[in-house]
Image (cartoon, rainbow, N blue to C red; front, side):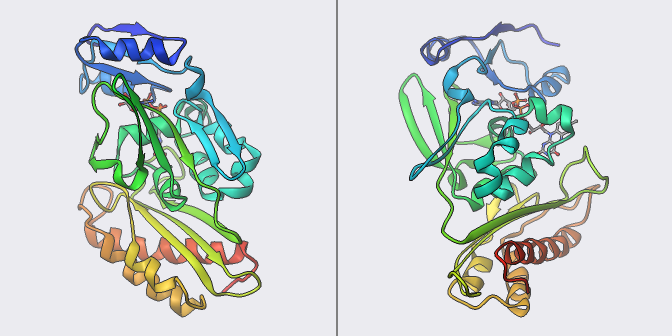
Length: 292
Ligand SMILES: Cc1cc2nc3c(=O)[nH]c(=O)nc-3n(C[C@H](O)[C@H](O)[C@H](O)COP(=O)(O)OP(=O)(O)OC[C@H]3O[C@@H](n4cnc5c(N)ncnc54)[C@H](O)[C@@H]3O)c2cc1C
C-alpha cells in the first residue's frame, strides 16, 4: 500500500484545518469498507487519510420533529437501522442498511461512505432519494447543502471538492400516511453488488388508495443512482391499482440507461427494474393497509 499519514481529528475545526492545508490528496475515512480496499489495490493513493469518526457532528443520529432525521456521515449502518424513528418513519432506509454486505460490514460501513463512494449500485442511495435527503457539505470555505439527487456526477464522482467533507445527511419528515420500501436483486443471497436496486415511497390520502405522493429511485441502471420521475407521474393523483402499478413499472424503464456486464445485460436490468418497481410499490400499499 502507498504510504500515507493517518489523522483522526476530534473536532470539525481541526478537520477543516487539515483540509485547508496543501496536503496532497486527503481522503476522508469512515468504515473503510470501500476505501481500504481501493488503497490496497492502489486505485487510490492519498497522502493523508482523514478519519472523521471522532468529529462529534459526524456521529449525530437524531430525529428532530419538523426538521427530520439527521444522519451523521460516520454513523454505522447498524446504528441507523436500529434507530426507532428510522424503523417507524423511513423503512426503506432501514431495509437498505440491513442489506449492505454482512453484519460485520454494516457495523463499519456508513450511509455517508456509501454516498461519497458514489457507486451507481450503492444500496442506501435510492431510499435516501425517495425520502428527499439533503447532503450537508463543509469545507474551509464554509458550509453548503445539496439535494442528494443533485449530488452525483458519474461513477465515483460527486459535487464535493477535494477540500470538502460530507458532514451529515438530513432527511425530511416523511409525508403523512406514507410508506417506503427498498429491494435489490443480487445473484447471491448476500455480499454481492446490486444488479438493480429500486426504492419506492407512496403516500395515500387517508383511508383511500388515492396517491398524494410517489417517489421511485433506481440503482445500478445508469451512471448514477436516479429518480424515475415518469413512473412517479403515473401514480400521483390517481387511485393506485395493480394495473396502475404495472404502468408505473413500465415507465420506470425510461429512466434507465444501463450497461451490460458480467452481472447482467442491459435488457435484463430493464426487466428487473420493472419487477422490482412493481414489488416495492405493492409492498408500500400493503404497509399502508391497502394491498392491491
Ligand atoms: C464485503 C463487502 C460487501 C459490501 N456490500 C455492499 C452492499 O451490499 N451494498 C453496498 O451498497 N455497498 C456494499 N459494499 C461497499 C461498502 O461497504 C459501502 O459502500 C459502505 O457504505 C461504505 O461506507 P464506509 O463507511 O466503509 O466508507 P469508506 O470506505 O470509509 O469511504 C468510502 C468513500 O467515501 C469517502 N468518504 C467517506 N466518508 C466521507 C465524508 N464524510 N466526506 C467525504 N468523503 C467521504 C472516502 O474517502 C471513500 O472514497 C461492500 C463492501 C464490502 C467490502
